Amino acid sequence: MKGFGATLLCVLAVWWLAGAPASAGEELVHRWLFVMRTLNDDEILQDTLALLPRASAAGYTAVVLSDWNLYRLDRAGPDHAARVRRLQHEARAHGLELIPCVMPIGYSAAILGYDPNLAEGLPVKEALFIAADGLARLSPDPPVSLPGGGFERAEGHRFEGWNWQDNPAESTFLDRQVSRGGQASARMDRIGETSPVHGLCRIVRTVRLHPHRQYRLSAWLKTEDFERPDSVRMQVLAGTEGERPLSFRSLEVEPTQDWRQYHVVFNSLESEQARVYIGAWGGKGGRLWWDDVAGQLRPHGDLGRAGLGSPGPVATARPGPHRA
Ligand SMILES: [Ca+2]
Image (tube, rainbow, N blue to C red; front, side):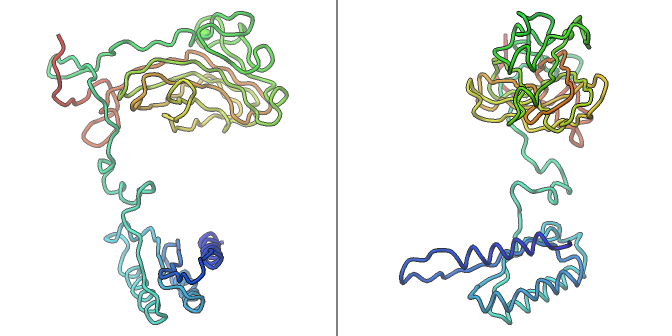
């Protein structure tokens, strides 16, 4: 199976370019064959070399090589360098230029492996830090609260403090038999019956945010025979209509587990409000409980990077306007 994906990609590239419409009289000056593979051994190299005569015969002008080792040349070793030179030499012999991909944007793990501080942090502006005893500590300004996050009160099974929920009393329930905090929790079950096509079961609220602040949303989760644990999410979407995702973390939930706390850290960017979603997107059978959903402002140095120590309430801060 090694190289199958790359081969398929090449086939698709050949197909796409060969099938690309060209206006009458228009000649494509640049025809590039995209090869996404790492030249880790001679077998992969030979597979790649075999593409060259076909590409040349089909009228291609260059081979674009996306190779993981090109992002970490000093760690790739002399054998890899020799294979790249061989590919370059053979490509040239077939009238093809070899174009290496470097400095990837979006898939930069090879570069961040050198130093995670090469990733730019999201900006936090005008956060209030109070200095004492040589440390500047973040002070929630204003404090963040999510009333109703404990799911203690509901009208029927419609929870107080939340804007809406899917199918109250059908797939979302106030459960006074199970709780992590207080005397009740939010239970989700029969999702596959109430939403057979999409498996949607969500509880949603709008929250006010400060632009350019770092927040942490937390919640406790318990499951019982939950068939699609990978469908469980906590999501934050900017705006009142939920236009733009602010959170990107997936939750590692077991089909059956006791209460476990989860965190989602997000940056508000330019947003003054957002919608917080908890629930399942693609749920089926089994039960899921939520309790003690809470929000918190986090220090903007809270990236767990070398030199900053473990995440905590202490962070460095840029000079800014003084607060009275
Ligand atoms: Ca509770």
